[in-house]
Image 1 (cartoon, rainbow, N blue to C red):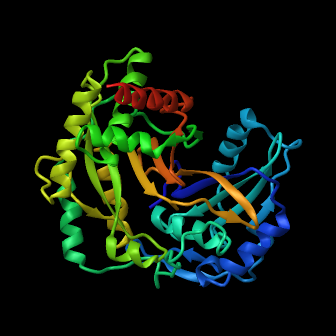
Image 2: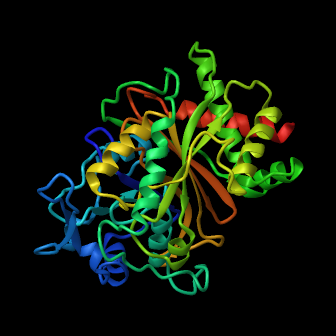
Length: 402
């Protein structure tokens, strides 16, 4: 699924208000993740173009290759943390060992950050949430009855092949998004940004006031951010399409690792000036999507969890990526605060990867009654993603005032 300019790596930044020792992180990972075989395996690609990849045990497995402390010149503050995170996001994960890392960062004036990177072949976004919950201390704020992670048996799955292939082929009838600031050749250098906490109750109140859903408000916020960003850069705002990953319920509820999701095309009407009309338009389209009707939405449901041969999948992903300008992911995390290695976890930011030629991915993650926006961009598309974060927060404020 990955390309040289878009490696399929999911990133997560966990902020803790108290110092976190490397030894404590090693102990948690050793006790809770390493026993799962998938965290001691890497993927070996087939020599044949349409052959299936397979999992191979790391030999030997060395925990210190995966869990480490980052040592810049010293503890970092809020102003330098984003640069350090971007530097690590751009560092490739080795192919010869299991593709994941946990990196501890000392923060000023006090506290720690834990930067987690996991390749998409191990876990999709929903499974990553299960991984984070697996790390949490039992009985210390973690949700009771949370799903335990289980491992998918193979790197690729092939259920209902012809039905999934038909869904992929339906992409071929779509026209591409117009040329815009978001549709440029990628250079592969990634930039990151994230928002301050937005109270979930604020989003719920906006949704209730319009008879819609939380997801509708968040998508309207993204559309409003694109509108403002285009205007600020001297371009006439245009409506674009986003790929919206959605979980496959039977697998997501079971807590399996691997990739169990589908992607749908959603129109983001950035060309509509009025924030309230923009929200109403998205809510109407999302109602059609939830009811199962796809004709009024720009796209069709596509399983991309390796249900077809990799060669076919890569071609379909490239084709589909040319028909969208960004990826928008929305994940519901733990509802109550967690603790990791005895320390309270104050905030979580997630960055989901974009596919093929798409240079912008925005991820909305809910944790303990708050939502944070994570923005991952290719610098050839947006080199200052914090501008998009500010525009998103302004769009939410407009909806709240309306």
